[in-house]
Image 1 (spheres, rainbow, N blue to C red):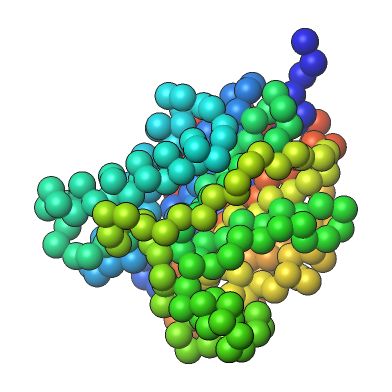
Image 2 (cartoon, rainbow, N blue to C red):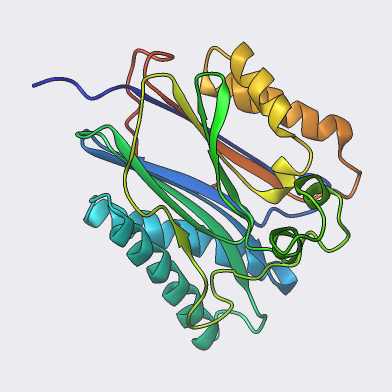
Length: 262
């Protein structure tokens, strides 16, 4: 039996200029499938931290129990996370209106294919052959303006209303979810970046690519981008978090470990 193509995962999460970190990220992997999740929580008095951790842990626990990879499974996992946050609010875990963004990536290692989905403005990028092959579309007010022809993509990083979301986990019983319609084939050398708005707001796509080209390991890639955030962000900047995944030929040893939530 052929060995699955190697996966290398790195993750980094920092509070930025805040006194607390409401981001969470984690992953789970075995010989047949893998799942990565990044979430950015919001809500008063630290409840955003509860929301993001609940989103990540609920998805990874459910995936570990049934590690199948499909668009239907992605929708199921995202809805499961939404139900978990809604239930926590209804049961009095917090009096605050907590909610969270989420970006979910799953890989079927037998078929060398991936599926992804998200709610909010935490992004997934797929890099291939020295270029950006795919980026998720933000569920945000500014993205809606751009889609309607008012403004351009460059406005997203600087618009005063850039943080206003049109979808978030836990914000309603039913929320808008975006999921890839079918499995996407992967190639050795592909790289994924999953990152919160506190990350991509200060690291543009050209810099992501330049750091990827210079990186030997996924951790190098994230550290290079994080330094850029710390150089250019304002003193009160948001938490910033990311997961980097290298698929094949950048790493010879498959990373398999239980899921951390940070």
